Amino acid sequence: MHYNMPLRRCKHALGVAVDGVEQLRDTVGSFVAVRWLFERWWPCDCMDILLGVGGSELSYQALEETLDRVQATGDDLTVAIFDNEEVSEETDTVRQRVEATLQEVDFEASIRTLDGDAPGSELISLAENEGFDRIVLGGGERSTLGKIQLGSIVEFVLLNAQTPVTLIR
Image 1 (cartoon, rainbow, N blue to C red):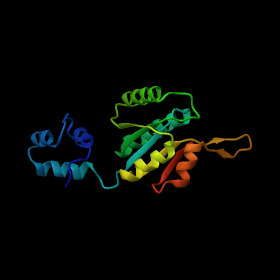
Image 2 (image 1 turned 180 degrees about the vertical axis):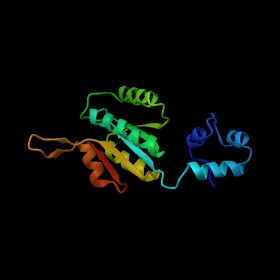
Image 3 (image 1 turned 90 degrees about the vertical axis):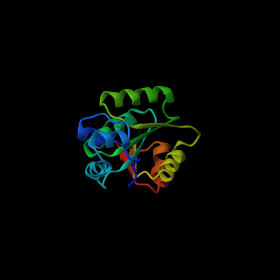
Image 4 (image 1 turned 60 degrees about the horizontal axis):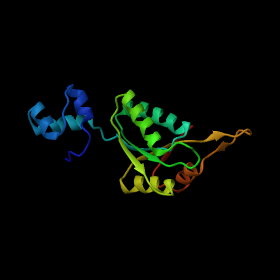
């Protein structure tokens, strides 16, 4: 059994703060107990979710909805912040807002900043290279004729990703 998985479920189950497997072992008494806790609180249906946030209001809505889901299901979340040319917000401002949202709901998530000129490609590469189960993006506004209009990054990811993509609108 590998112990690289997050300890937050075990922390929650025990009601104690532990920083690693050894400290958890000392708390519960043995590695057998740690293994039982991981099997109990780390069901095989958990997902590693990659959420792309580019500073649009729809991406912040996707952040909030994704946080609701991962808190309910116990999924792991990584937030990838990217520079979106269609939005005027800087990545530092986006990062601050993401961190504030995570603090509001008391949730720990990994935050990555994607650098480069092709955020769609970078999201796809990150998802595939690190084995994420799903990419989540916010986007898709309705035109005056009622058709969904996608931004260039969302469209690129939807059309090119091998990883399943969830679009939150």
